[in-house]
Length: 115
Image: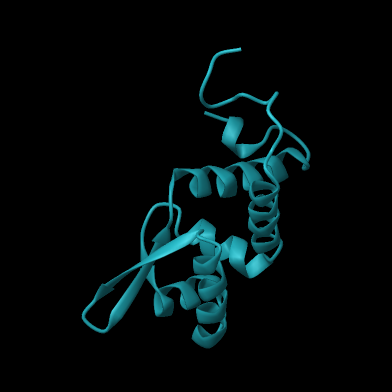
């Protein structure tokens, strides 16, 4: 095996396990998955996200606070508006892989495998 990323023969430190479990806990919610999916290619305000996921802004705001604490999203302030975006490429990959994996559960060829 090479060094760096991808070494799976090393024991995971307990704090990394805990953080990974927390990420999955955050993803175990339909609204949060929809929020992260909406943020995949663009940053959005709470109001825009609320409209996108058809939930009340106060509810979306609470979800975003949890996602931010779990370091899945980060914020940028512009005047009085706060914009949310995915924290990093790993989050984007996680949410994309989760959705694509779900597509495999259905019949036929998953959409992401069609050209």
